Length: 112
Ligand code: AMP
Ligand code: ZN
Image 1 (tube, rainbow, N blue to C red):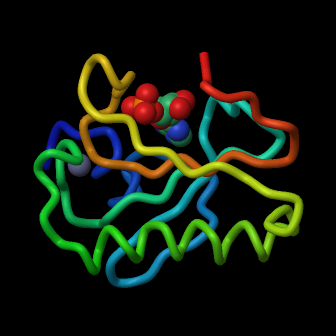
Image 2 (cartoon, rainbow, N blue to C red):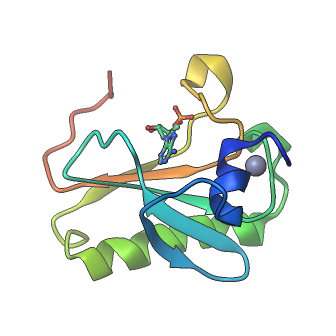
């Protein structure tokens, strides 16, 4: 989608701190980290919100990619959180689905 921030990041039109990429998913550090580790995992295919997502395999891959990266970065054993915000009340600001992965500190619940 041409006017989507995350599609532009995938296309290399906007720079990011890339962590991982394969045929289906792309992962990069969040520009406004809310924890010592905070990265996003997104599908390469543009899907606006979780309400528009129907591919269980792809959604599962987002989560497994997050855990794989958390292990590689060394904070998986201590623990971490994955979350996907949906629409306005969920706090979604970028309308290309993304899984947040946060770690490296104690995370309070529920988040502010
Ligand atoms: P959400 O509020 O769930 O839609 O999350 C959007 C996330 O994208 C926020 O945590 C932002 O800090 C992050 N973000 C926005 N622009 C960029 C960017 N150019 N590079 C990396 N992360 C970004
Ligand atoms: Zn997009």
